[in-house]
Structures are given as structure tokens and as C-alpha cells.
Length: 400
Ligand SMILES: [Cu+2]
Image 1 (tube, rainbow, N blue to C red):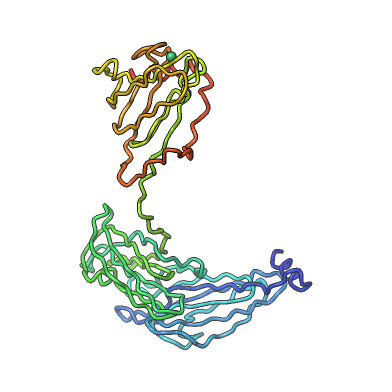
Image 2: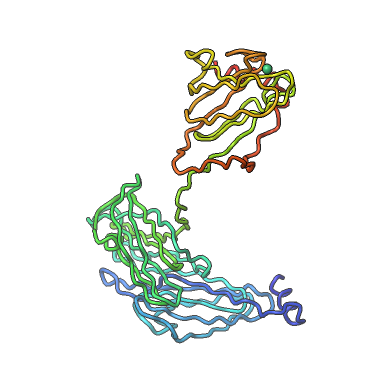
């Protein structure tokens, strides 16, 4: 239905630009000799989901490890609602051999799947075994990612082995930096796969990718490249030759960790006999500024100031604004922990009459800039508790 509407819109000029073409890449396919006289080959299915339009698809075999710029394409026509069966597509449809990617393109909507497999090397257990390999849209290529589920046992009578590959859909060669780690994050090695020629694919053993054919039971690979690639792995049971396809998952490089900028948080004192908000959480290095709003006169006095041995203050900072009816008082917190405080006129340490708590968390302050003296771009502070008394009891319970 969508397709029909799109065609309708296009035919009547409602859509000004031509419909975008769809491009799918099967990252690896083969006609290749395997061990024990087995022959790996790839079967492909292409589906035309349209109800009323034939589908014209161009396809191209992009041989591994060579520049496929300007390669020849083959065109096929698929009637509406039909699935085209192309067995041994590399050998029989393209007349090629070896490993390579396959690129499909059409102006219409279409779907592609593939299976790369071989005959069983075990005469007592005939049949085939292989793996499903998805067709991936070009937009699925990424500049970095992770391949999970890897293993590498160099003793081929046990465990698993893995091949990793990268398909380069771009017009320039690309080298992929890889790092292999064991499941617990221990680095096993780093290396470079490529340069991979334009519009090509390279596949290597995971050990070869890091120049060290080291055995490991459970590991993963992270990779990064200057232009987007399609990463994948094939993990093979050394004993049965059962195999799975692992598609790369995107893993954006972490931005250089920027400690949060120091901030200033405001607490209103008054206009009645309350600190508002009563509870404030700040990061180490942040500044709390109390704004005095009551002619009654209040103070902001740390419990530690009145009671240096206070068991309720775990941060141990000492401050005292003195009595103020207007203006502000600021204190910058450098000690992680609970910093209970009170108004020395209307309350005292460990009370709830006019008390508050600053909780200081341990975010590294290195490199953080202090806010400008006039800076008002402070993180907003929440509304007052809807039930101050209950809030106070909760707080009292917490610090006891
Ligand atoms: Cu007071």
C-alpha cells in the first residue's frame, strides 16, 4: 500500500524528487574450497513485496581484497509477490569464485537474505551446515563498533575459532583498528585489518587480526575506522564446524570524559522559618548560596560548627553565615558526605525546627571551572517539599 501510494504520488508530480534507491550489502559470500574437500557456497533469496509492480534489481559481486570500483553489474527482474531463488549465486549467477560481498540496488522496496554453507565433512552425518548472513543497508555501516561472542582455540580439536571481517562500502581504502579483549576486559592484543580496498571486504582469523594467535574462551573485539564499515564475525565450533554469524553492534567512541562544570545552587532562607529546598545534593566543588529573605533574621550554620563531634555530619565542613536579614552567603563544598546545618536563632544541631542538609557527592572536580561571580546559569532547584514536616521526618530518619 505504501509502495502504491508512493508510485501514485510520484506519477502525479506530488513528489518532486525521484524515489531514493535502496542499497543492500551481503557482507560476505563465497565459492571457496574448505577443509576435507568441502565447498563453501552462498544461496540468496530476493523478495519483491510489491502487489502490482515488477522489481528491477541490480547486483554486483565485490571480490575480497581488491578494488571493485567500476565493476560490472547484473540486472534481474522479479515479478510482484515473488521470491527469486539464486543458489550458489557467486559461482552460478556471477560466474566468480572466492570470497566477496554482494551489493544489491533497486528503485523499489525489496528484501534479501543469504546463507553461506558447506557439505558436512563427516560422511556418517551427511547434509549441510552453514550460517544465515543478513543483507545490511549501507546506513548500517559504522565507524566504530563491537563484535561479541568471539572465541579462539588454537587446538582445532576443541573449543571455537572465529574469523572477523570488514566490508568497506566506501570509495576510498580504509584501515580498521581493532582491539581484542577477554570477557573480563583484559586486553589480548591490538592490530589493524586492511587497508581494505574500495568497495571490498577483508576477512581474517581473529588471532591474525592482532598478530597473535592466542587462545581465549570468551572475548570480544572493538573496532574503529575513519569511514564507516560493516563489521562481522563467523564463530565456528572446532569439533562440529557448526557456525554462527555475528553482526557488529554500534559502539560510539566515548567522548573525552568531561567532568561536569562546577555549579552554584541556591537555597532560600525564609521568608518564614524554613530552608527552601531543605535537602540539596551537589557535587564536590559546587557552591551553595543561601539567599536571606526574612526580616526575622536567620543564619546558615553547619552542625559541625556547633558540634564538631556531630555523628550526623559525615562531611565535616564548617561554615557560619552569621545573622542575616537580606543578601546572600555562599560556601563551596569540598568534602564528600552529609553536611547537616541549622539556623542558630530558630533551631540547633540535630533538630528539625529550622534545619537543612547538603549532600556532597564524589564527582572528580579536576578541570572544573568555577562559575563566574555573576553566573546565574545555575541548575534549577526543585520546588519546596509538598509536606515539609513529613520530609523533615524522613530526613531526620536518614541522618540518624
Ligand atoms: Cu532562623
